[in-house]
Length: 223
Image (cartoon, rainbow, N blue to C red):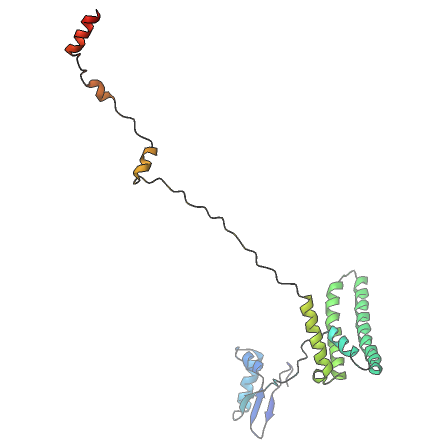
């Protein structure tokens, strides 16, 4: 291992040098520290074969190991063990809360207010220490009946706290019907259309009819 924390394992019997895939990816950048390490490795051990370190896919990652879960698991232990376990658990919580308050007082004396920042930092430290204690105390906790009971209980509680599904909101779009224009092809509707004024000037130019002889006789008798 060098000063950067890069570890290379040699097997001189098989003539192999085992590196991580992260080191291999970083070495592809020219002039990087990892590139120089791999170049030196190939130069010093030209006959060695470079292999990659295999990760354990079955490694327990302790996913879901929250404060609530740890407290529920401790509560499920026998009465004699429960009191002792809670005493150790609470001692870690008090210790890191006291460290957080001490840090806040020191910074307050210098006129600084990093309360929210310190809260997040010490929460992470407190969880890391509590998790390490829990895993060390209960090495195979995930293979016990209590583990499955707590997981099922937490899942049921999550379902109960879920909000009921809401019906989707229906969006009604206003549709405007296009106005229908009167069709000139329909003869019945032609009368409704405005008519052009008739030209009567032509009738005035025509000669008027003269009175007939019968009309003359009528006038004579009347006189």
